[in-house]
Length: 617
Image (tube, rainbow, N blue to C red; front, top):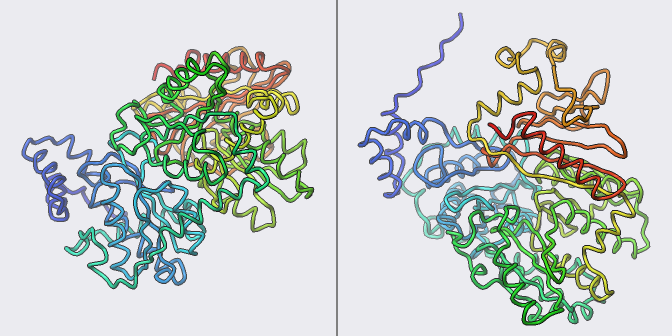
């Protein structure tokens, strides 16, 4: 006889459980007021489901409730993480945890509550002083040989959000099964006692458990970045003809970017920050979204550049930007009349080729070096690897996958020179297996300077890449849909046909599922020649089993390959694990010239919205 599932707790019980645990007067009052107002829908939204701990850690709106980011959920997550590390990582208490935070509302408080939870379980802690760039945390984990690293940040999310990013003992984002193991451990460590609320950890435990190496980690990090440039180039850097306009988007990048810039030999007078955006401000007052990918994010930097051009005609200008936690990077080059903003894939190709050129000067063979990119990034890097003869590895999306694959390649004896993802994330050979916006600043400033001193430009360098390896054009963006059911229905319709949506549940066998697949055969007049659906582990380009080379995806993710004259087009549709309201698309085409490639890509993007109805969700 099957056991009956116990009934869900009554809403009033959830309210009382929250009030029993929460000692923060602000968030207690939120729940009390909602309870008094009988706002059952809002209480259900906040209390019924627990914030999910996944490979990205935690990320949510800051407010009261088990589904949000607040003191209670941070303490519980930290208690569960501590218990899991003690069980899973040898000598975890001695190795310790590196903890950093950005400038967002509550970030400092959340970091200190996390440290208190770790210390109270006997785990040593290094709390990085002040605001830090995200890449410094995994760098610190690797430098100290720590058991884990925690960074309190929501990266480029809106000001109302915060997050809890986790790096494991290998200094890389966690992957399965650690995410599930930590989530289970959190469920077993939900009780919070009075001492857990201290934000002055040293008063609760022995001072001997605190690791005072914050400045050493930061200094070593900047030194590692300076190693990306050769000492012989310092004099060339000091004579750069460029002015570099910089914005950290109201984040924490300014101090670290400037220090890295000057450590690499660039003169202070070449560094021009956007004054209204250079200081950390958790409200991000001058940008609608603090994300360099979003339209308008560089408006103030561009305006400053135009003003400089008017007063100093002929001055060479370059915009460099980081997102608020300084792990992403973007750039825009002044042509003399307009700004040319490079896409994430274009920056990836430029940085990869520059890094490759520098390595070639060493005279060492290329067969033991490696580069990586995610499956939604341009295939240009794979083409470069084929023609040049170095190892290339494609991964699932996210630096959790790129970083862990890079670490595996390093263990196999490869030197991982570079990796990237089209969403403005770039990784270099600095000992960090994660994206690093500060390192990107230094490498980009170097290549822009040297190209300028040769009488060339970054755009010219990109054109040379295309002429050498082939023309690739991309169009990456997203449709907005805040109804998860509508999104799931749309993806089921793509798999099984619109008429089969309501009956497309789980099947008893893979063969039965494959028999029911009814993917579309054309789009925008192009024939679909191959389909890879990582959500259900299907790829008809690998018959007869039709199993893909890449692992399955926890999110919706389908890639369509289109045939055509003079090169193919590839389109990937996927949901986002951290921005649930975005249904992302990545479309790339290759051709004998850039205009033809871009025209094909834009035709597919238009058809995704109109023919397949994604713009109507």
